[in-house]
Image (cartoon, rainbow, N blue to C red; front, side, top):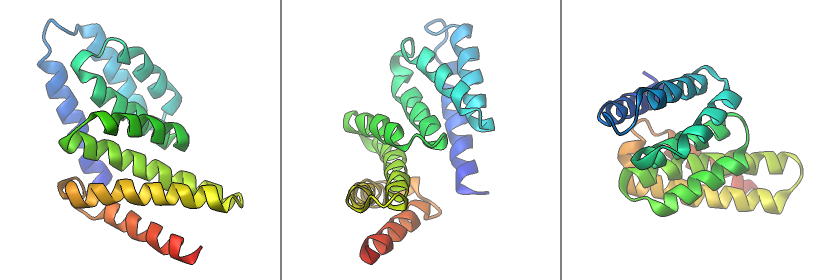
Length: 168
């Protein structure tokens, strides 16, 4: 099983448990809207996923952090790295434990990708700044939330960043 598949399955399972346990607090409309947004994210319809998450966030209540993380993930997958990093970074600043680690993983990945884009455009200093920020975010994930990186993909990304920074 790939790391992405494991995390996707875990997110869907956790979200299902959370939504299922909400009972009368969050109606079927919310659940079906969430299913549409989540499915859109999974099949690559990122514009639809982002619209769905934006609609849901105002009524998400205690599920807001999870939906913000998924929204940031949709931004990341759609190539809107700066926005993904901003959303995930804001979320990480307000979270603790694994929720913080998950937000930092999205933030660091988005910053890494943004740094690579900037470097490819010849913007060396802004690119380096993004890579250093990504290195810090992913460093915390690897150090404090190692269970979120069971296959070492975050550690591998961090090593790739270190090598790139050394070469600059």
